Length: 289
Image (cartoon, rainbow, N blue to C red; front, side, top):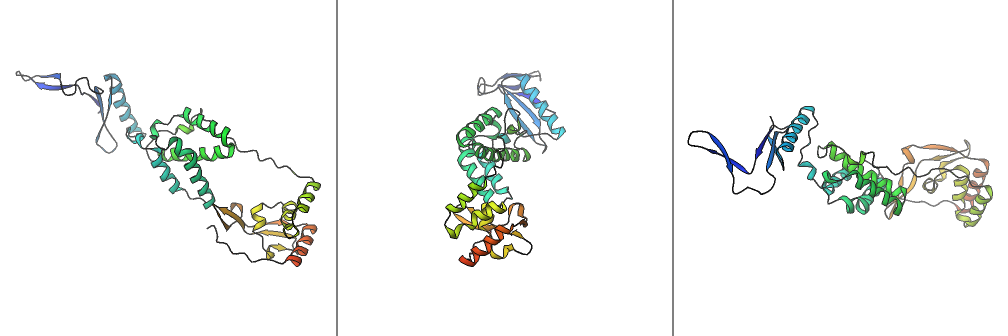
């Protein structure tokens, strides 16, 4: 059962056996007077100090109610700094190395400088909303969205670990940066022809395959001679080249799925002629995973 303790007075037993509270000279007028005391989930007493008896009593009762509902959060837990939670969140991610680099970069450049030294319990929705708006204006939607994802994930981990009662980034006040416009613009044939012609002859297969088969840049760089199936008239996308920091690696195609793409007669004819003229170069790279 929660109760309230007066820290400015102490019980003194009188000659007649009664107990009277008298001023505690060492504590009188120092700090908050009223101490709310309740039993936490582990069966031990937990306390917090307040200026008034009413607020202290209300808080103690609320904490025990939360305990009974399974919603209890130790008020001391909110003092954990976000930098501690952020380190744990980054270690807990099971993502490909390129995403890992992105998360670490956004944490180091944008999240940690603003919120790293803050106790998680002091971070407010209004602050997050202002931070997201400033990032969007200065660095663009893509950067702001990834940085917000990192902060959101850290605060969500704090909630799951019982450090926070609710995630302030979930507030309606906080507007998540929108997904960047993914509208596809189809170039006219004249533009494609001009881009092909602008490449040196030994590199023209790159824009030819890009324009004729719609492959992504990394997928084009990852093509091998055996990926062109002239009989079935398809191009097999089995790998892609990705840049991780300063290094390049082979990686599985997007969504880790091998796929085939239709190959027109024109692309097939140009590919055959290109390989016959320039041959193929053996390339060795480490794999992402």
